[in-house]
Image (cartoon, rainbow, N blue to C red; front, top):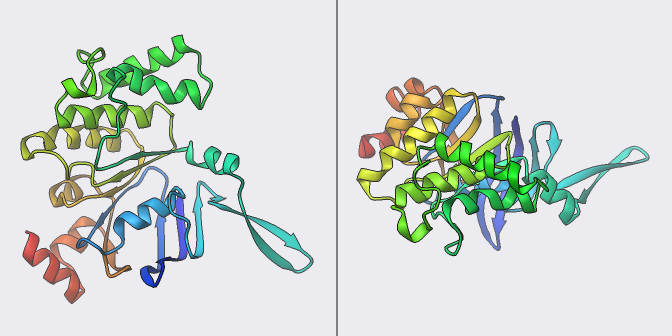
Length: 254
């Protein structure tokens, strides 16, 4: 589903990603762990072209993201995709952020309905039924008419997950989805994510929730200073790391 080949990202002189190679298979849950500033969130944003990579290539579902290849003679040139084509690519990828970014003047149900109507051209009746089904799936069927200000942080984040799922994505990206929540609300969001994982959704999750990684991840990737230091199963990377940097990190957080 995802293949990153030698991905670099610069912000001015700051070299944030340093030749990252990553493969995530269809139906796999990949959890990115590592200290703050290691490049995890930037890598996530590069997957769906919220950040344009500086070098290397990124494929999602076999399609080159952000660029298209044009063959001229014996040379292959890369050309930036149009905004319309970029929007088409991003529509296949759902993303959930730290902050919920819900429209405060819309009910929870309307928040979930909006993108399928505006972007996919779904009829309002069909979008409403899809939204109702998803609100039930995230355990909020009794909160459809509530506005974001009437919901807890955990409930707002679950609405945000339903909103992302309403676009029927092939891939879900989660950027520290529980970091802005009070501790007692974290479990309800992780529960929805676990259900998604068991349903076969391809997911890449940036998180500090090591227990979630142990329970759900097919692949754990430990990053530091813009590079992948170690990757493998949770048992390999978290419980029995091979690299000194990985050992030092988990010695502090576990």
